[in-house]
Image 1 (cartoon, helix red, strand yellow):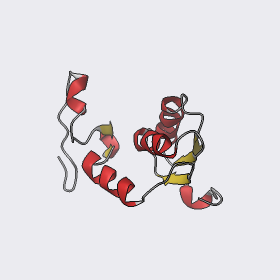
Image 2 (cartoon, rainbow, N blue to C red):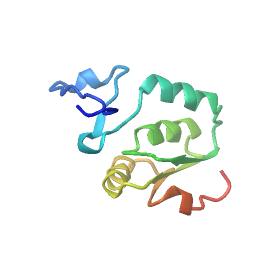
Image 3 (cartoon, one colour):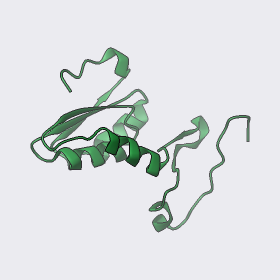
Length: 116
């Protein structure tokens, strides 16, 4: 393990990821889903209302984007942006069941999501 790198413990049982644990999305590049309790706290602090339009910069594979899509409901929308093409494609697939969620692959600083 290099300086500043996280250590990841493999799990064989999917139910073990339904806890407040960081999940590796790309171990080689040290990309993870973030600490669920921290993200939940930050999303809650945004006080997102039903029917809102939200921009999620750095959406990874779309886990928290789905949480936001549930929060805004069918009258709202969420646009996820992910610079890592592999993760963006996974997010698009993972969010395919959410008609109120879209994913933009590319540099989020170069993408204008409009009013959010």
